[in-house]
Image (cartoon, rainbow, N blue to C red; front, side):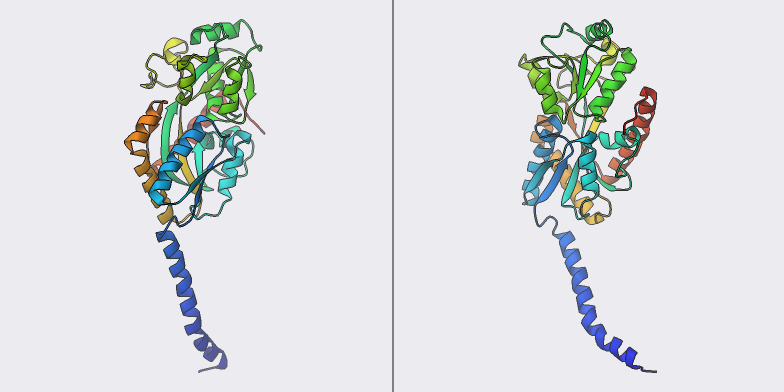
Length: 329
């Protein structure tokens, strides 16, 4: 039976259908044309440090690939949590990308509560680099080897300082594991990034710092001294620098990574577009060589591979954090 209500519905359908079709078409076009406006890469540490430098190097290459401006925005603080949370709550359209560090895997076990979930609130995009850390001391330090640093610290328990780019950062965990395995007590001094921490290391205002190979230039120019590195084997960027394991603490090993993530619910087409283009950028010989000189292995991945790495790292660091006995509010 044709009622008045049915008649109104039938009459309205032709007008509604084109509107729905146009919305769907616009959504598909936006995905296909990504990016059609500037893209932000959020770095959760202070500007000027090694992580920031790598992000800007990648951002410049992506800008050329996309023909769009890629803006690197630093949101440091709270052990990378401020920047991580900001991206987790951003619009899931691909225009806000997190340049994550290994802290994304660490913080879920290190902090009693977080305003984001590293698994549920992010979509993995691509791995960017893998790296080890180097142990730096000021030239005023009496330690000329990692063993001498351990002995020096043991002779002055609670007197020496060890800095990090933030409590909860990957260098911080590498340092805490080092202190535990060496059986030494040093005062931790957190900074809002590597750059301000290193600025205090050079004149000797702090006694030790674990940093990436991007800081090796300071040792080569004679401004600081490098004692050892945290990887399982010596790095091609500085083959003369021994590992902590071979020189002082057998069994010690810490490596880290950097990767791209976007907010959860970002359309899969956009995630794969960013991933593919990031992999293209990282395969560039000039970028690979420049990163290798600083001890970074440029290594892209699929979203799935990065997701597996994140889950494995969460489990690994959870065990380390429990063993070290650290918990932060």
